Length: 188
Image 1 (cartoon, rainbow, N blue to C red):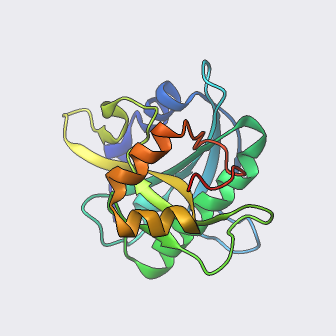
Image 2: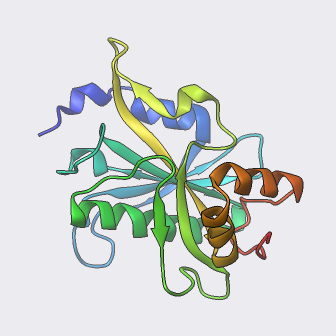
């Protein structure tokens, strides 16, 4: 069992970077205890909300270190962002296998109705400083990895497979793609 005292200050760390928690979904959403809750953060300067899992770190998961998952989106897409976090966090808890940066999740059909999003890439957060991605305890030891889930379309996924992740990120940058917009069209 993971010692909860190792995570003293984690809530403050998340709020310092993502903004204040505005509301949350409990662990028993949907009638069963899924092993994690989801907090909703509103960034104080950027037009961005983030859904962040809390509690996956206490589950039996095979990973480099305990993990937390975040998906950031435009302010009116907070529910969609929370669903994407739920999909990955629930899969991690159920399978007992964590994610690494560069990995992801691909679905056969859109994850969010009326969107082109069929997958999620596990990456460092594109709008956060490096100290956001690893939470350290009071002694300075790394105790939790924050993995950001970036929605991708099927065409973007195939582009990444044909080239590589760096090429996709460069393409997004070149096309000025708003990756916070879960309802955006494919950049490819």
